[in-house]
Image (cartoon, rainbow, N blue to C red; front, side):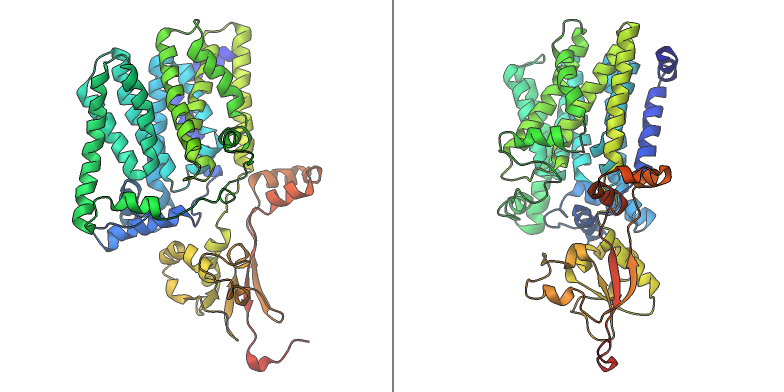
Length: 513
């Protein structure tokens, strides 16, 4: 069986195409799209370039490696969530191709294929692939920078163009998000060790980075009078980080162990670290591994380890959101997949069966993690557009937070002018989104919040329900839904709070019976 499977992926690039086909299928099945969060900020930045060229922007909208390509996508394909996601998706496909090629060159086709499967089935990657994400762009640029440097380390030849190119890519990643500076720890350790190419050759990486940053400093100095404009707004846009917010399900115990708990407990990583830690250590340390592959694994592990340590150390600046660990977890995927593929390729028949089973178990648990993800985090915001379409001749009121979150879909539907954000008045239609209006929010003052909640006598016109997850449909179709605990089933069957459209009675309609 293993020989038959091996024959499918060994020739040429077939493993890459199979892996990318699997990736495309998973993205289609787990498509998220608009999430009414950072993606709204990036879309506003993209429209800033379209409407106000040349553009500077503010926190988030100034991230040019995502906002400029997104502006181009909007110009080419119109305003829609596919165009919004397209730049991040293309960056991710580039990363997958580079990771597959680098692993194949060092370890062979089967390890490269297994590594690709481990990455594309990882829930964090599969879900973030369909979201406008700077995390993906940052990772793709930094991995490309790493790869240029690694080519020099492999040959022992300090190719100045490659090293400067690595610095340029790292600089572009830094323009994407300031956390990209964490890669300086990785390159700094190589510099201190004078690893393989001599200490001072690493300064070419610094030169490339500085060249990109200098261009930004000049541009911002001309446009704003403050060369450090982006840096200053990044540091001061929020004075504190509340670690109870944006935790995405991880457990808070103590700052020293919380980052590790994110990787061990969160559904975005499932059983990844149970595979990656022992297999990665074996790949890095075992004398049975060829020196070239062992060096590759050590560099991957060092990059991922440095990133993990930096994110963990920056808890006063960054919330413990799993996406901040994307580089660390994806390097873990590469280590785990490469090790399993190497055992599959080089081991005895018994070892090969065990490796294939391990890869199937890793991918299988990942698929479960993907299946339980919420694909409608902004259901109430997006459905406001559907409510407007259901009542094309009327204005609709909603709370200010929902209106703010839905500004991009409203722009795409050319319907922003039909929204009222004042408290509902007699005779009007009011769209109630519990996710935003059930409590005070950023754009809803505490004293005004009760005015945006349903009152006795309001007439329900429509109720909007989110579609059940694919897993919920499977349980319903097989009649096994009653076997799940009620709380878990409720979350699978109703992944998002419903939204409601009310008609406010006219003042002369009288009191309800």
